[in-house]
Length: 97
Image (cartoon, rainbow, N blue to C red; front, side):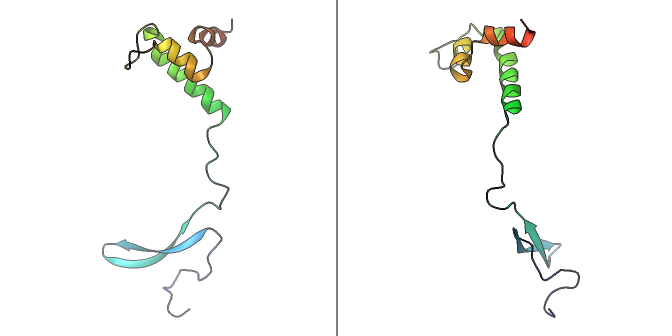
C-alpha cells in the first residue's frame, strides 16, 4: 500500500483496470470502467428503427421517383427493398389512414 499514491483505493471493482493518466507531464494512476461482458450495447430498439425509417422517408420523399446514384432503381424502390414497405404505404400509416 505504501507504493500507491494517496487517495487511490487499492481494490478495483469488476470491469475496472488501472491506467496511467498523464496531465501536464505528471503521471498519476487512475481507473477506467468498462461494462461487464454481455452488458454492452445491445443494438437499436424498435423505436429507434421506426425513427430512422421516418427520417429516411422524409429525406427521400421529394425525390422518390428519381434514380439512386447507382442508377439501377428509384429512391422509392430502394426504400421498399430496404424496409420491406413501400414509401406510399409508410406515408399513409404515419398520417393515420
